[in-house]
Image (cartoon, rainbow, N blue to C red; front, side):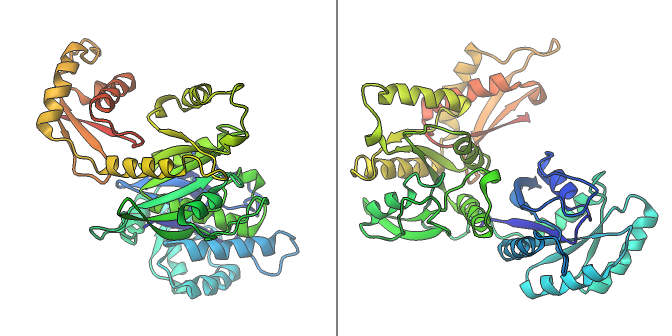
Length: 434
C-alpha cells in the first residue's frame, strides 16, 4: 500500500519548510508572506527504511477575499482524503488561533491519524508553550523546529507507526502493472486493446483519464492487475484541482505497482517528464520498462528503431538496463510483447541467486579488478550474498566498506547484470564490515 503524508494547516505556519526538510531538497517556495504555496507539491521522503510520499498544501483559510482561497480549500480537502497520516501544522510562537480551531473541525471529519505539529519551537520556552494545542482535541502534540530540524525525528518515528504494510502483504497477491506516461500517449488505448473492450474512455483530448483504473487480466495462464493512470504532465501545467488529484492517484498507483510501463509518444521521444516518471519508479525500487507507442507515425528510413533506441539509452545513462519495446497500439503491433516484457521484469524482481553461485561467479571478477585502494588502504571483498528483501539487494562483506566509491559500485552492478540478468529491475548494493 502506498503511504502518503499530508502537511496541512493555516497560512504561514512553516508547512513548506517542513516539507523541504522531509524531502531533503528545497522544492517548495518559501516566503514570509502567507499564501505563497497555492499548488500542492509532492516529493519522496524516507525514514527508518520506509519510503513515503509527502504532500505540501496551501494554507487553509475561510472568508478571505483572495481568489485562490476556494481552490486551495478544495485541494487541501483532496490531500486529506488521499493521506495515510495528516500532519496538522501550528505555530507555537503565535499560539492557538481561531483559524486553527476552525480547521481542526475539517480535519476531524476525515477520520485519519492526525499528529499536531507545533512548529517554530526553537527554544525550550517555546516548546513548553506548545501544550495549549492539546485544546484542539486531535491527540498528541509534537514540538518541532522545521527550520533547524529539532524534534522532527520523534515526529517521524510516530508517523511511520501509522503506515500500512508497504507491499500489500498477502502471499500470492496478484502482480500489479501500472501503465504510465504523459497525457495522450495512448495509455487507455493500450489497455483497451489488451482487454478487448472499451474499458477506458479514449479521446484525442489529453487528460480524458482522471482516475487510476484497475483491470484484472489473464495472459499465458497468469493473472495480474493492470492499472491505467492519468497522464502526468509538468507541474507548471497542472492547473485544475481534478488534475492534481489525478497526478496524486497516478503516483499512488506507481507506489502500489510491481512494474511500471512508461509509454512514450514516438513522435516526441523521451522528454524530461518521462525521465521524472522513470526516476520515481527507480527510487521506489519498482520494475520499469519503456514502451515507444505510435511507431507507425515514424518515417522508418529517417529514424530506425536502432537509432531511436540508441538516443534513449544515451539519455538513460546508468539506467540503460531498462528494456525498450516499439509498438503501435492502433495497428496492434507488438502490444503483447510489451506485456510479456512486463511479466519478465516482474519475475526478475522476485529472482533469487544462491550465495554459492554469487561467490563462485563474482569473487574471481573482483580478484581480477579489485576496488582501488583509498588513502593507502587496500579493500578486500570476502563474501557476497543476496538479502531477503522485496527487491533485489546484494550485500558485499569487506574490510573497509566506507571506502567503496560509486564507479566501483557500478562495475559490480554491471557484473551482476551480465551474469544473472535482472533486466528492468533496479538493484541495491550494500557494503558491510566483515
